[in-house]
Length: 84
Image (cartoon, rainbow, N blue to C red):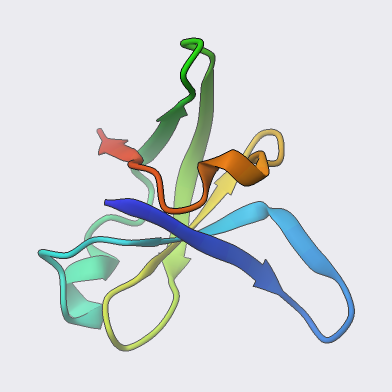
């Protein structure tokens, strides 16, 4: 699983909301089963950022997660852990 990007509205980037793509999941129905699960990203120093899966993002199986604090730019394309 990797952090793909942030959710952007017409003018406002929602930096607390992240788009996460899971290679094993290719359909929206499979991604919908993950709604409500917890998400964690850990940086090199060991600091953990927690969030929760809020919904699906596209028909290709990406999920949308909302974090407590915005993720830094170094989190792009880095692994994210989804757990119960």
